[in-house]
Length: 241
Image (tube, rainbow, N blue to C red; front, side, top):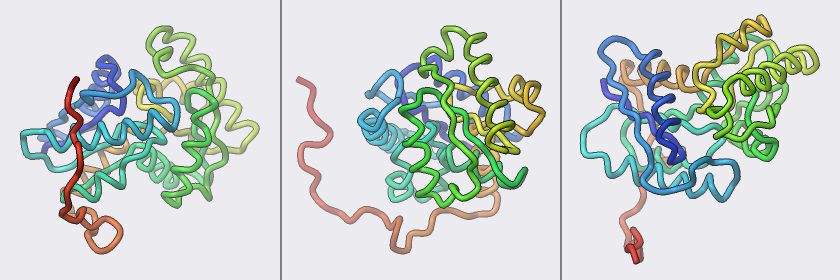
C-alpha cells in the first residue's frame, strides 16, 4: 500500500517531520510518500494562503507519476479536501477531520490546540463543514506561528501544553487534538501535562487511510464528489515569465 502525505506549505523540514510521523504510524507494508508542493507559502496561516495551498496540493497530487492507494492532506483547517475527492478515485483523508473523528471515540468532548489565533476561525469552520463541531469544546491558540514550532521547540512545547491544560481545566475537554501538522511528535509531552488522550492528526489520518484501503472503500462519486466535468481550463497552469 502506498499513501501520499502532502504538506500544505513549501517548507521541506516540515514535510520531513510530517513524513516521519506518518511512517511511525504506518503498518508494515505501507509505504509513506511525503510530498512538498512546488509553489505556495512557506507556512499557511490565513485564508489566502490556504486557498493557494489547496491548488498547490491538488496540482502536486495530479503530477505524481507513480500509482498510490490513498492521499492525506496534512494541513489543519485547510481548504482543498473536497477538490481532491472530486479528482481522485482513492480515499482522501484530511488531518483535521481525522483527528476530530478519532477524538470522539475517546471522550465526550475534545479541544484543538493550534498555532495563531487567526487560524482558530478557519479550524472552527472546517470542523463545522465536516459535521464535527458539536462535540468540540474549544479551539485554542498557542500564539506561536507555524515556523516557530521548529525554531524553539521548548517554547513550543510550553505554549502548547499550557493551552491544552487550560482546555481540560476550563473548557472541560476530555481529549486534545494537536491542531497543526508541524506539531507532529509533541503528543507525548501534552499527555504528560494533561493526563488525557492526545490525538495527532497525521498519525490518525494514516490509520484511517489504511483502514479505508483495506476495506476497499473510497469516496462516493454520486453528486457531491463526482469527477469534474470535462471542459476547457483557460491559461492553466500559468506560464512562467
